[in-house]
Image (cartoon, rainbow over all chains, first blue to last red):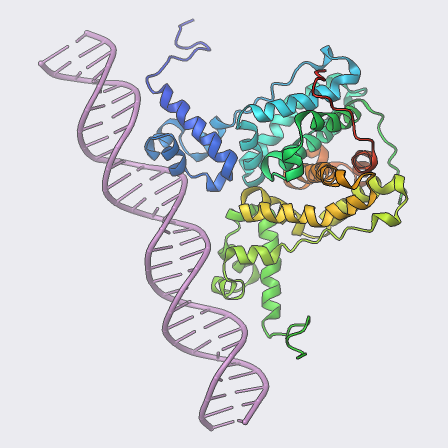
Length: 201
Length: 201
DNA sequence: TACCGTTGCCAACAAGCGTTGACCAACAAC
DNA sequence: GTTGTTGGTCAACGCTTGTTGGCAACGGTA
């Protein structure tokens, strides 16, 4: 196997520029969403010409795809005590969101761009789905439980990092984890609640 | 007091047109977000000329402000049995979201437009805040509890109506209520969880 | 009838967008 | 030293956007 073909692509002289473009793109997508994050603005941030973005990433959609290769980096929940998976997951998502701009960028674009929506769906289906299936009582319920987990995680991210509701944005990390942990725990391992359609309370 | 000055503004011949513009604007904002919902497209939907939109609403921001005067129409939770406020609120938000396009439009724009973000903050602070304060144990905790409720409600709306995660979008109404009810109940009336910063589980 | 505010359409503007292709400078290979 | 490849700049294109001003028809009022 030749060195240039393997997992390690040949290093190029332009790697620094490519990285600068991706960093600027993530910041802009995270801050402005898809439409307002213009290629010209991204290029200005990266101190290069807009045409370079086209050369290296084809078009704007290609740039977005490259900039938001989001990996949730989920831990193996099977190795965590069963009654702590909720807290553990809450903590992990908070970490992941504050780690870099990729998650915020993906969320923001997911709301305005159809390619972004598809990407968001894929991330949670392919990455969160299996992890949930490994800890929940009935694997058939995994997609629904994963969707519930996603709803609470994304909702907090929305309130805290995008909409910046003051009480949510200012809440200490540990308090957020303490509140969300039990919620996620119930979504993951709790009994499926009774939900007869005749219930009109 | 003259009739024309009072709460009932003089009916105009153009009221039908104004209403058509607002309806079309809500649909477009809800479906496409702020930037992609162009004034030309809205005017086309309403079967009028783009310049009419400018005449009646000043500019695009004015149109958005008029189209998303969002009222959560929250019920008086004081009249609901204390242990059912969670379910009741979950049901109400689901109803409210499926009632018309205003909530989806406001959410979508809130994510991409700074005026929309401000509007979203105002809605939940001024409308949800007082209702939460009326049912939660310590009024000082109301903003934080309201933010938690908002995070779960908005997160489910995001997953179900905007990102359209298949398991969330396809979940029966009553099942969503059964899952979210206890979560909201705990956020509203549950004990403030222990959250010492030394906790590293 | 003549008048005037309202309603509506049309054509155009300046600005900004994504995108393209020509062109130059630096480097590597032979 | 010549040649081909790569990294980068510049100016322009076609298009869409929000926005504007002029102008024709309508509808009450005097």
